[in-house]
Image 1 (spheres, rainbow, N blue to C red):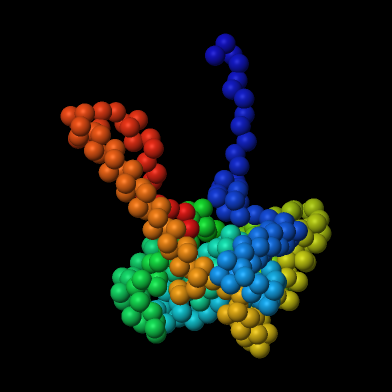
Image 2 (cartoon, rainbow, N blue to C red):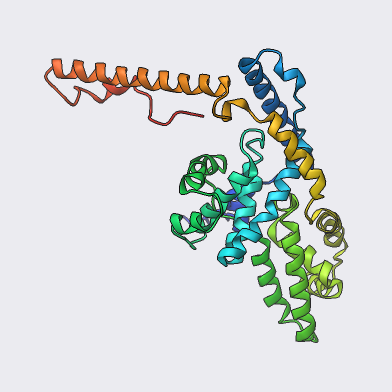
Length: 344
């Protein structure tokens, strides 16, 4: 190499190389804008669907706002731990399913897909992606008024909405590492540490009802929750990492995160959500409701496209047979064929 040294390449932390960091990190302002734009686009499409179903009907509809949509999603986030408790799924499944539900509604609206239905699918999907699978029939049979089809019908849509990014970096895992690290510090009573860990884990579970995972890293959430449970332990750990330096900057960064967990980490008012759900029945996309004119038109259009595709394929096969090659002379002969998956 003529005595020349190779250039040094800096190694990025594992988390920064993850899809979670690259695809699912936002500022509070970006999150608000994403939800607002999604809601506005959904209302415009659904308003047109109402007009298609019955001209003039959309003027009588009170559509949900982005905030109201999020309120309903939050209620069903709270039902995921209950559902996981029935099956005794581990915390990894519960936390993953809650992340999936929140991610899904950054790409979709409750006016198209009710959280009650999506919740069942994200839990089942999470059992597979976290390697705690359960047979579909066994899963559906223990949920009242649920068939295997109710679970599977939305599975591809959910996976597609997640961008097939199934791996989640969770704050409860970061807390476990933090807890092990603190044990190496001197003069830390084990009883105090155990109580602090339990308290921090409670706060981490509360953080799943907030947008914390979209804005902060898992380690930041873990440290903030430890600081809520035991400020002294959190400060002791920070001092051990900063040496004689000041940890004021980190502490200041944690304050808004702690405030978010404490103020938003709980279920919404049931009466407020009940009113949102009542209005949702009146503003649900008619294209998703069997029996409406809009639904029938969409089904008819889908059948028309399928028939056109079938006829094109049959015509290509006929020509191939006439040319003496039943498999087609070249691959390019298939260029005009669409794939078999129609966009919804």
